[in-house]
Length: 61
Image 1 (spheres, rainbow, N blue to C red):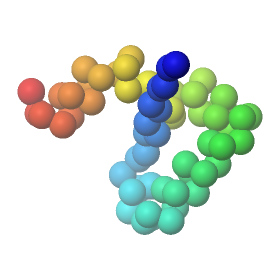
Image 2: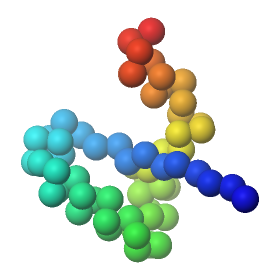
Image 3: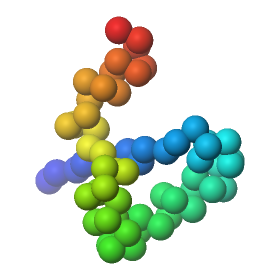
């Protein structure tokens, strides 16, 4: 059994548009074509692959 966690990169302006806008983006990735396109574009990132960057953002070190 395996699992993976993907995070979705958002811009500050996306955040300012509110939770409903952010939810629309996440919901859109349920479509395989959207998921594949966003993964290829780097919008979706793997927590395993990008953990060091996430850790720096969370801990400021």
